[in-house]
Length: 272
Length: 229
Image (cartoon, rainbow over the protein chains, first blue to last red):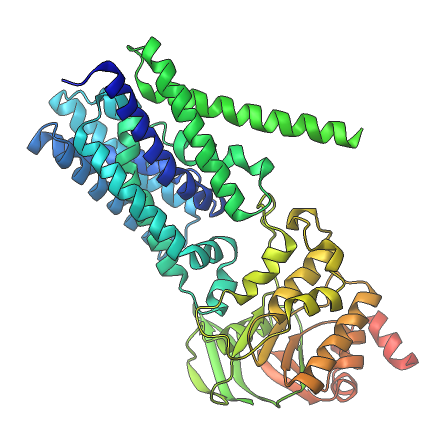
């Protein structure tokens, strides 16, 4: 049996790895106009999680495989809507995640399943397998981002230039969406399927007013996610009944506000 | 350097280019003008190899590398990217860098961007943004540059500066330019050859030849200017 301090540091380590892989991915999503993608994919995973729970029970591996399959399916559907049906990405996202979320809710209501911790997250209840997943996945994501830095940014900022310079936007987009889809599993543990923006969008948005380059924005996003994890996890000790998700999301929102307000005040003082 | 013969291109059932034939010589500045919706930008995209053609041939000298300055380049407003980093992205090629584009420092200097190097792209004016885009296109490692409306949003001084830069790159550095433009001042001063395109090539020759045959494409202001000059 682990002591309370050991558990606290294990949970903090989960927050560390989550910040390390989710915050940089959020930077890409924000400028690909897909800042909603994390939450959308999170909602879509409900269908996969529900099906996995029905057949295999509450095992981390089964639920994770279900979540990843559902996220891939939603991503594929998003791709078909964008490319074949020529729909804008926000419409395509809404259609794909809403239908899969509805299917998940339907299954839940039929079988009276309780997956509350998947809705708003429970980082304190995360298993050892989940921690190992985050360690390995964190390193893979960082490696992929470093390796694909140029094609990823080019396809986000200027797809025509990317093509002109010989990069495939299709490959870059697919790499990005696959990374986000698998990362959803990690975020499910911490903030649940409805609050994924707290690790994907808030950190990137928090670092924006201070960054003067893409790498600075990404470093700022990671630092912001780390600080909000530390605050969220520490405060959640006092409010055990609430679940970690809302507190992690609130601390990320608090940092966002502080960052933008400080920048705004500094700018006003500079002008005057 | 590049030859297009009887090229037909259709998209979504609409014919965009019909029997287009043209030729671009090495170290020249060739212009492409014509009414909106005449297929100019589509022709550039076909030349970049982004669309397959229905009929015709596009022959490019072996080893020729192409670079594109797109017409519509919306500025990612809140993106934290300095002008220097933005221009350097022109070198983020997936291939080798055997062919050299314009040196970055020279691009900044000749496009009057040196003092903006460290500025964020969100802090640039419309004309400065246009020049930064042109700088990014010119640093790309290429032999043939396809520039879609490079003179838009520019004052006369900037236009002259850019025109002379393109001429210098063509005459002294072996570069070739194919430029979409509606700017008759720039065309008359800096272009060696001009094609008038409205789905088909309607006229070809020097700017004066083309404008003499197809004055109806000129707007009255330019019309007047052509007669005065």
